[in-house]
Image: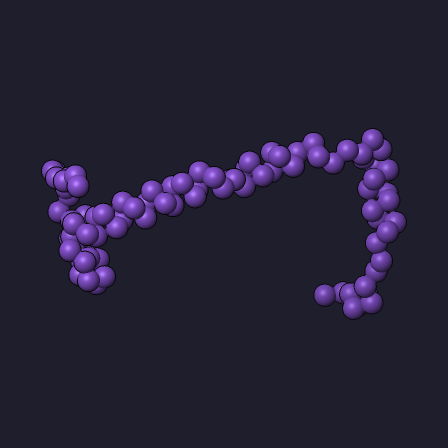
Amino acid sequence: MANLQIKGIDENLYAQIKKLAAVEKRSVSQQILYLAKEYLIRRKTLQTSKTPAQVLLELSGSWADYRHPEEIVREIKKARRNSKKLQGGF
């Protein structure tokens, strides 16, 4: 099994890790190993999931309608029905 030594760690970061290790009943070394493993698992998951921008780009161009925009708007407005609840206003 390999050994790892970390030099130059920020005191504040070390204190946070030490506190977290105590809460989770681990040594500092065990906590560092746990955090590294969790990070690598999440990183792999994040790399395989699509960002909202990617999803939007995949959707672009997926709606093919050769009608003129005004014709589409007219059709949408014609299909709307007034709600009786809103006839008196808000």
